[in-house]
Structure formats: C-alpha cells, structure tokens
Image 1 (tube, rainbow, N blue to C red):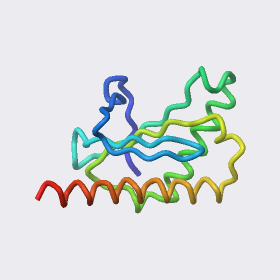
Image 2: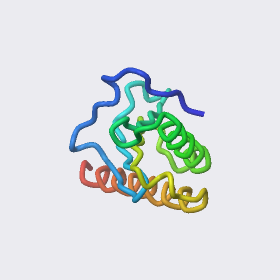
Image 3: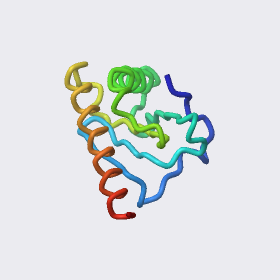
Image 4: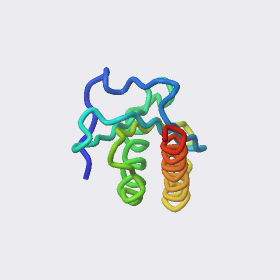
Length: 118
C-alpha cells in the first residue's frame, strides 16, 4: 500500500504531467518526489460535495478502486485522484473498470514519452 500525500504543495501538478479523465474522477500523475516511496492523494472538494458524508464516501470509493487496481500503478509516479460529483452514482464494478482504464492510459502516456525521449 502506498503512502498518502498530505501537504498542499505536493498536490500541485503541471500541464505536462500525465493525466486521465473519467466520468467519475480525474487522475493527475507527477514524478514521485521519492521514487522508492510513491504516494497517492485523494481530493473531494467542498465546492463539489457540500456534505462531509459525500466527500468521505467519494474518497472511500476512490481508495477501494485504487486498491483493486494497484498493480496498474507505476512506481515512479505520485498519483492525485480528484473526484467528480457523479462518483456518488457509480457502482463498484463501474468504478473499478473506469479506474483500470484511466491507469492504463497514464501508463500508455508514460511509454509514449519514454519512446520520444530516446
């Protein structure tokens, strides 16, 4: 299991960082500050989810989906997961499938960037 990102500064990403979108969330990947200890961060904004119950549920769902697809995550990245309001209507299977697709997209982007660099 990965460590969590806790500091605000570590959540900041650039436009060149790999990202993937889903109907339920956005994933932003950035180079890990400590490659031997990659981290994850979960964002459920108060602007999007008015109730704390909904924010907690959104983060709980994302944690479950990440745990299920942990083998698809690249060790050289820190991942930031940003919840959309539609996450509350997702089933477990729909979310796990969407998470797998998004993580594969980031891995594909990483492979594409590696080929361009060489």
